[in-house]
Image (tube, rainbow, N blue to C red; front, side, top):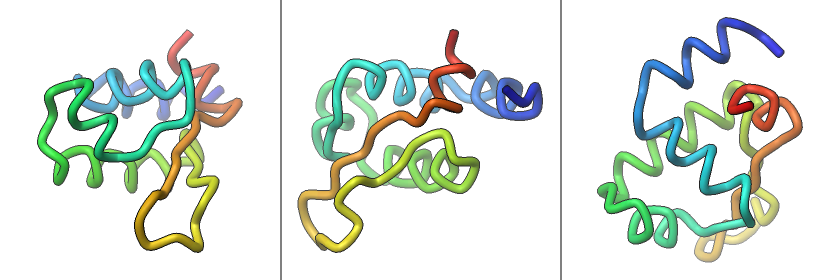
Length: 80
């Protein structure tokens, strides 16, 4: 676990919520948006940032629609 990653996640309530909800099951960005009440553009931006730090992963990267995201092992360590 990197303390930089912990600080990065904790500095945004959206990133915290997204990691927490992805710890329950794989989800589409639209599902995350509607469940958390966050605008889809903010969800997309946060997912890109989290994916760049290897905290989440897209498990269906070849799909244009229907991209499922999961939390990585590193992401699980950050939210614990």
